[in-house]
Length: 294
Figure 1 (cartoon, rainbow, N blue to C red):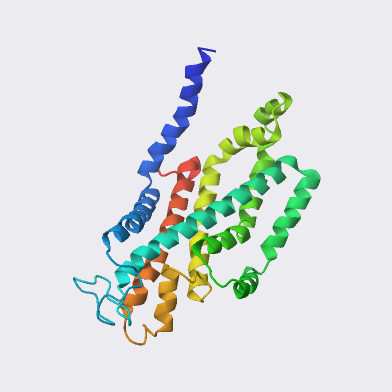
Figure 2: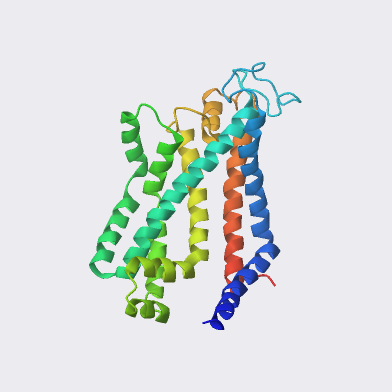
């Protein structure tokens, strides 16, 4: 056992070091990560430096960007930069909560269906297909009619409950190919229970795939939330990048030539989601030896 210990450690660490080596050399992954980190740090730190709230009336109405108001002001004298900073927080929060919930549900359904098979697989596959064809926007409109106050948490919950089916299908397919491997058969013959086999044997062999799936769900949640906010189905309290676009459209910022009101939130959403997808392409190249750039 003593001799096998260090050898096992070396065997585990070698692929990690190799992946880290290629990750640091991958321009797409590094560039995407830098963009996401810059916006994340701005979301966490910039609001701490602002003395007023995002919806406070602090300056002259419809003022262009200046040294005092970096992104200008709205038609009501609100600081667009403050709204942008606070909106970034809501954007990352809904992406984390919505994408995280969708990933958890997708993994639970995908692993269970792929490993158990049979009747369990048929039932879970039927549920997945039902949610997949569910008209999410219609359901949200109905829910919206009965909810007086909507929050980022409620929005993230809805996104997470409706965007997991494709992840479940993909994970199920990967689990099907792993459940018949020798190491899984050995664990099964040793009397290891199904949850432990999934967590200890199957999931670690799909860790890179699961991480990439979460990134896609994260970016997808941000896009869905921004779309809902833009059409007026977002949170009724607070501020987000999608709500900024909604307010800019509602108060005719484009017709008034107030480009500083709608360009920052639109560019922010595009940059964050685009960086996440570029990161995903980079990760695919890192984890897939055939796609690596030597």
